[in-house]
Image (cartoon, rainbow, N blue to C red; front, side, top):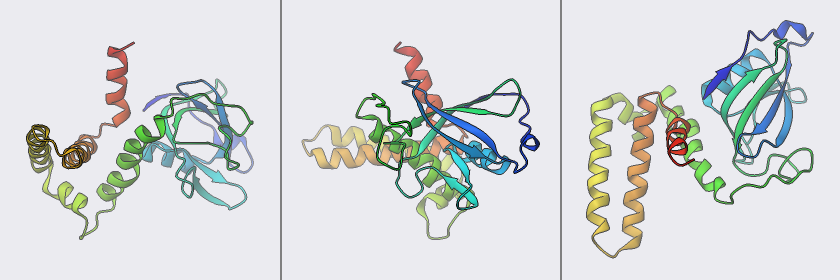
Length: 209
């Protein structure tokens, strides 16, 4: 996630809320407008998913927390006056609560596969990161973080070997399960290294432009 902005002055608004414009990083369509408090902005940067301050609920509200249609943050910027935020994001499904692509009723043309790809972002930023920040005794993911990077890297290597072994057979289901295990442990390794999947995707994108 990249950040380009001057100091945000939340005191410019009596209620401490700043408008935040959400734009699709791939299509440049404006998806919606919400309001952020300083805490909402910090949580957005921490989790990598757009979080607003809901004026109706009077609490922090992560877009997609009930629908699953998260907005995964790619870039954050602010205007020259420091009182409006622009967030370029990757939407995981329709943005509007009505089911429309945008809150302005516009069609947002995207590759239909983006929802599945965005699940990997969700898995890292919402599930794996939560187990790292708030570990649970019974959580396998938390146990990996407790054991440290050597154990996590070892698991990635072991799962890669399993993928190679299963690739030589004709059981597609077993092969897909082993690939899933490899992807999961690779995401855990990325999180341990404090690297977002988005950063890896950016490298791939730069190679294939």
